[in-house]
Image 1 (spheres, helix red, strand yellow):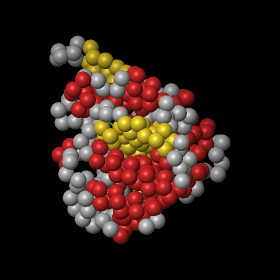
Image 2: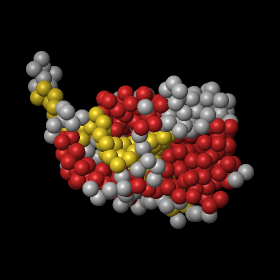
Image 3: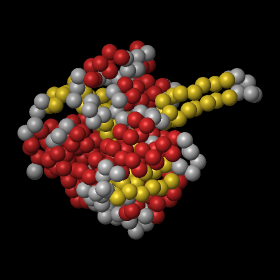
Image 4: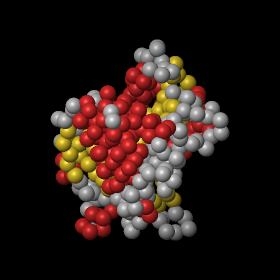
Length: 352
Ligand code: IPM
Ligand code: MN
């Protein structure tokens, strides 16, 4: 029995989560696994009502689950940063979800803005470190609000943190079995401490994986290659900030935020899966948002829960729907409503 905590969150989050759950139910029916869900209403509305974001007691409850399925966090009436830091980042840090796994896959029939590239060219995975770097919130102000103000934002990198992320990336690359190539993405020419350590950790761990070839790309160059030669990449490992940035670019070349899914993974603990786009509040309640990213996140969740067959079936069903059904992935232009897209994927997963 898989115990899944569901946090639909804000804006269109609940609508896309609903479709993810619909597909999950179809997969359970077809592949015969059991699960139960607990709902949590953390997000902007609850914060505005009660002042509460994600209390420590909730973290303890989340720990009792096998996985978390998250919709989206972000509310137009809440100052940017509060919900992101106190809900999303708090969960990632408190549950030590040290991997942010972000596949960049162009499904068949999906339009990419990159000219002359197709599904065979755009199919790689970014392993983003998820608990360190610039995201730790270390630093401070001196003389705040004066002309002499100083703002310090420190990037904290530990050997342990880099190494466990790099080791995960090597293991993932081996399991994926595609090109058996892992690229380290950094900025070693400038970040002469942090990325020097990352490079050394990478080179040391690489010795344990002789079956995996390795290379290195600076973060600015990788942005260029994502557009020019995305087919060069198999698995990429990088730090938290760079991973954040390059995966938005990745989402664009795979057809947009409507299809980009991600997993915040603690391989030894509770992982959390989410569509990586935002809450898109202006489309709330209109049944027009494309739920494929949330459905993809549900599929990733099943893979981490050990339901490999079900995960593969969901992935195939997404590809079927993009290839055979949807006219576009753009909001309002798919030719189907949110719930209809969920039905199409669920039917295919059920084998109908
Ligand atoms: C993401 C988001 C978050 C991040 C924000 C909302 C804090 O952009 O999941 O990529 O920067 O990690
Ligand atoms: Mn981001």
